[in-house]
Length: 358
Image (cartoon, rainbow, N blue to C red; front, side, top):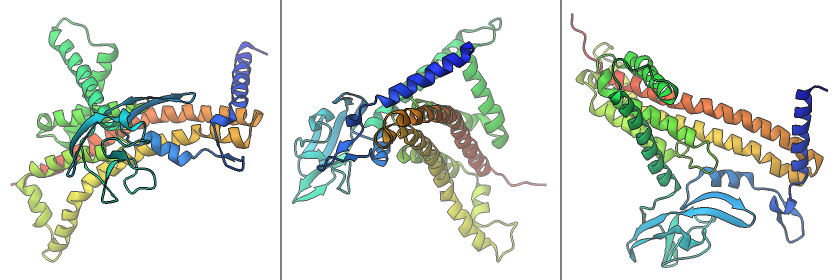
């Protein structure tokens, strides 16, 4: 047996041993009859990809390691409240008449108060996990881009070409500017390039950050993708030319009987474009995270149904498939940022149409 085969045999043996030694009590809940209850994969996935009022990092034995976040709400009955989410003790306590609604509530996972025996949602301005993640991502992205800009500002004609990280950023900027923005918005490239480049790097950075265990799922949140799509929506329709609006409501190149029909279709298209941007980015990122978590949960499911060597074998398959999906998610992180930027540039370019005069 050569050296490589010995290494692979040792690695597989270790994974099998680890899988067979996983403690069953940590992977299942006991019914009153003493039977093991399987892991609720759906609840686990939604807990990891959803938003919350604290930043859960990991569990160490029976201890949950999480960072409390600021809670800021305004109630019509009790006024303004500001405190840390640790006051809720992870959803098991009430503080100042407020609590986090349980799973059986229509406001599950949200802060509510009891008014006349009914749960009512106050105005919520809290710094949740996703909000904190957006703030951190924005600060880090500004620091990275401004650092690269400072490097270019301090260089002169004799300076060598950038390499390493700065060279990679320049490559991405050149690619998006020359191959995405310029072909679609040829006459107003420099006017819209700052927004489109910002959107590309922000989405790409958030996609990559979402792959880090314990991080916030930013672009997998529909509120974030909707906000990004609305930026494109307002830019397209506020700065659209007169010819753009004329082609929507009264296209002179169409027969008279067809113009009213096409006007309705084009008007609906104004709103379907940002809708497509919102759903495409949200669904792809959320599906990728859910698939990865689902594959890794096989380890814990088989620890109950196939203890011992069977769980170890499935652990090997799950880990290898998880590594493959993680690598695929790196590719998807770039592709989704590219697709959002490309479609936004196409929509903006179409709004800059002008009449052709002979």
